[in-house]
Image (cartoon, rainbow, N blue to C red; front, side, top):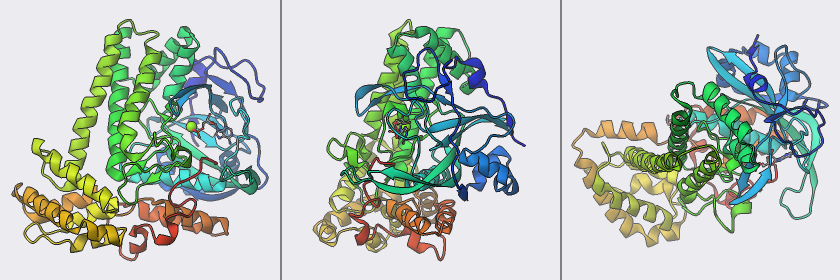
Length: 516
Ligand code: AMP
Ligand code: MG
């Protein structure tokens, strides 16, 4: 039996209005709202690791009582349902109030000495749903479920997914934004994280000039989510912002090292606890293209492309700093936090890529070699994941391009850059030889940090299509492989293959629409 202790409800002001209709909400951080029941819920998938975090057995999770909870058809004792109020900058512009438009919290579970917020995404309208329906389609829910768990297994801080439930109801979406709406199966994902607080939760009261609410929210966040930060109020605020900057820097380097592109880094999708949050049109890069964005809506501006994530995260932190400046007596402490972001980002980036390239540690003169590699990977259209795995297999005493062969995505581009690549590889061999360590050690270290299996968009799309045609086992088959992303898994080689030609332009396999 899960124990609930709903601090956010208890300690932060709530909305007096209990009406579900879309509206602005002032002076409150949450609104009471019940999930809208669904017709024929069916548990399609769950994460045993996330269930373990909560101390839930498979028997409990698969019981009729929990199916009701996970679909929004019922609650258990101790649960309280609500949606929270936040704003945000979307694509660089202030968007005003947003809020949990289709995510409904079940409360805060306390398990194994830790606290977890549980929320149902796609559980029906809330006061924050604006003109939308509060629902989610199966395809985007499968992706959210798989991405959350894949990221966890890659060692990337992330919100988690407990379950995926098909609602048995249709959801209407204009999938390609081309005026053609169609019915699709609906679903609900139960997400789990210590905190779902976003930058936008702080921006909204600051923008509205409600400094009392902002102060209250900061006090709450410090007390619940950052109890280790002590001191006088001003000192705590400075140390907290510095910590948010540090966690955000570490997070973006994690994304980069595994080739993940978030796709919608709006400030309402940035967690103050440094977690990856809101898996929409996101994905793992196939061929190493710094300008690649998985978000079709971002195809023109490429604001959220692979190479810009570090800069955009800093921009987002600057917006958070703007919000905090309403109550920070000394703006210098906020600037210090941003500078700390730069320092951590640069240090972590070097550390992560030194490990990926197999260097014992980063040396100042490694930068040109790494920059050249990035340049070549792009020009020669090389699959990032396969490249680093292949590089580990190159013998530095006998340089050969053979282990890298699989990684090339375009034969003409491979040939055009073959000589430059061979020259680079010779330099790389010299670099790793200069570390003077036994080669088996280097290979094992590289394979421990360079995943072989990532959730390529075409793999997710295959699981979606199989599930839509009645075979949800596809989700667990894929999740099983993603549980050990760095291990060689005999018989599972096909999950490590680069994007096949048929998937290059197929919807869902490279770029994704925001429609979800
Ligand atoms: P996103 O860019 O997906 O993070 O969403 C931005 C905002 O739109 C958030 O406030 C979401 O809660 C809201 N939203 C997105 N889709 C829906 C939907 N189908 N129903 C209600 N609100 C939604
Ligand atoms: Mg969002």
